[in-house]
Amino acid sequence: MRQREVSAAAVINERRSWIFEQMVSRGVFVPVSEDRYYMNEQAAGEFLHAQRRRAPGVTAILLVV
Image 1 (cartoon, rainbow, N blue to C red):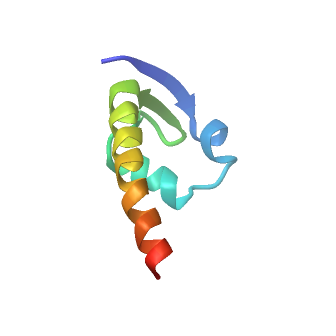
Image 2 (cartoon, rainbow, N blue to C red):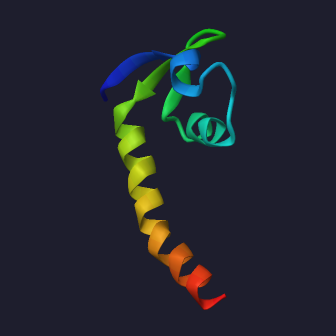
């Protein structure tokens, strides 16, 4: 498992966003202190794969509505 250190400020411009919280809850960003995180590259790849898998379905639903 590859990990890369990142700071919260670098990722979210000093504010916590909904998508950042989703990524933390799915293990993409792993907290190590109050404002420091490690990015789990394997979890990031899985997160992006899941997003890409859902995108066509959401698009189809929006086109029907």
